[in-house]
Length: 206
Image (cartoon, rainbow, N blue to C red; front, side):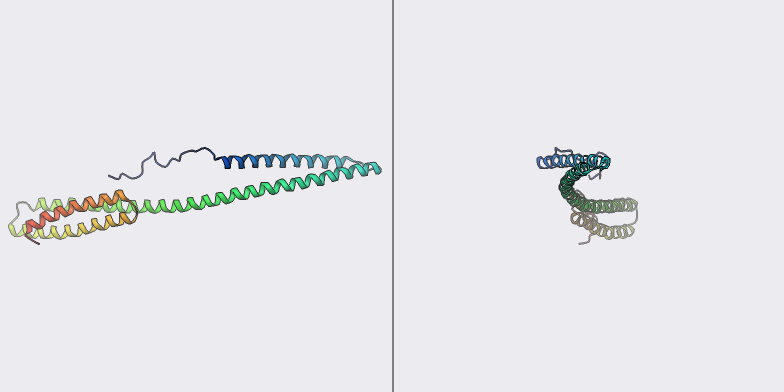
C-alpha cells in the first residue's frame, strides 16, 4: 500500500568534490590571494608617493619611479581581476544551470505530489462507495423477492459505475507515472469487478 512521503525522506547525499572542481577552487583562491596582495602593494605605493615632498628633481624622479611601479601593479591587478571574474562567471553559469534544473525538478515533484493527493482522494471515494454498496447488500437481507431484485439491480448499476471510476483512477496513475497507485487501482478494480460479477449472477443479468 502506498503510504506517501515519509518524514525521513528527502535528505541529500553528500559527495567528494571532483578533481576539476578542486583544481578550479584552488586556482580561484590563488588568484584572489594574488589580487589582494597586488591591491595592498598599490595602497603602499600610493601612501609612499603621497609622502614625497617633491622638493627637487631627485624627489620628482623617485615619485615617478613609484608611479611606474604602480602602473605595473595596476596592470597585474587588472589581469588577476579578469581571471577571477571569468572564474566567477563560469561558476555563475554552472549555478544558473543547476538552478534551472532544480526548478524543473521542483515543478515535476509538485506535479507528482498534486497528482498523488488527487488520486488518494479518489481512492477514498472508491473505498466509501464500496462500503456503501456493502451496506446496501446487507440491508437487503430479509426483504421481499421483488425488493431484493430492485436493490440488486441498483447495486449492479452502481458497481458498474464504480468499476469504471477505478479504471479511470488506474489510468490516471499510470499517466502520472505513479506505478504504485496504478497497481493499487488495478487491484481495486478487480475486487469491484468480482463483486459486480457476483451481483450480476444473483440478478440473472448478462
